[in-house]
Figure 1 (cartoon, rainbow, N blue to C red):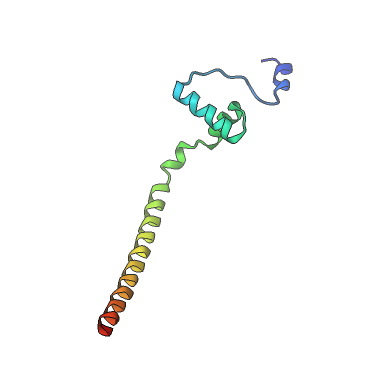
Figure 2: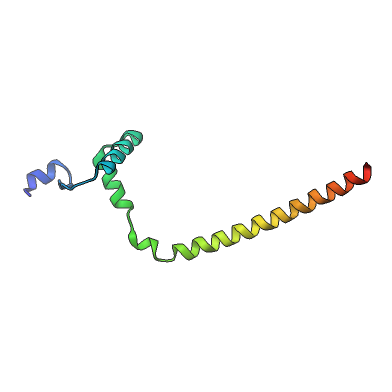
Length: 95
C-alpha cells in the first residue's frame, strides 16, 4: 500500500472479508442503534474480542461470586421466613 493512500485514512488499512447475512443484519442494526459506521462497529468488536480472557480465571471467579450471592439469598430468605412465621403466630394468638 502506498504511503499516500495510508495517510488518507489515517493508520487504517482497507480489508475485505466475507460475512453471513445474519452477521450483516446484526452489523446494520448495531450501526443504526449506536450511530456509528459499520466499519467502526467492526473495529470496536475486534478491539473488545479477547479469547484468552474466557479461560483465564473468569469462570472460577464467577462461580465464587455465584456461591456468595446464593448464600446471601438463602440467609435473607431464611430470615424472611422466620419473620413471617413469627407474624403468623402472633396473628393466630389474637384470633
